[in-house]
Length: 118
Length: 112
Image (cartoon, rainbow over all chains, first blue to last red; front, side, top):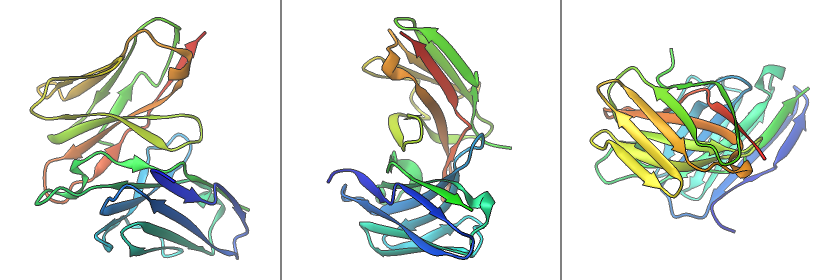
């Protein structure tokens, strides 16, 4: 596969469920991101990993727990979500320039996971 | 308030016409990026323009940047029905702790 893949593409879960979203990038990038996209709101950055180290946690509730086991894989573990967490969750990756801040290159996005919390 | 704001919020044109979309921002940037998103899908990077650049082209796309006015425009020439999508500008501020900040997007409809 090429680019950035995400699974599952659709997920419906109850508020007491535990589920995980998976992202995999095949681009040789060294930074990965989780975004949340809700209707009529700007894309919200949730987490950033650079070289498998979390470098940003954008005040995200603890019911969202990211994991980056290696530079190609990123997970978002979900637990005890609320209906307002229903959204499109997008994963992205980029390459980090030497001695440059992280987002100075373009990001490549996966197709997203459409999450519905009942 | 958000860094990048697109204008207009929605645009409807006839196939073959040109589409112009604008983005304004508030503080100094390192670069500005335009992305496209088809309904319910991921974002696709279109063009990145750095603060020391004034214009860039990619196929039918032309992006301009005016740092004195803190604005950018995306021009799609000879539009096609397949250009129907949402378009986002995203800014990267100067500084070590910067991040890519997106606007709410512009919905472009190209009528066949």
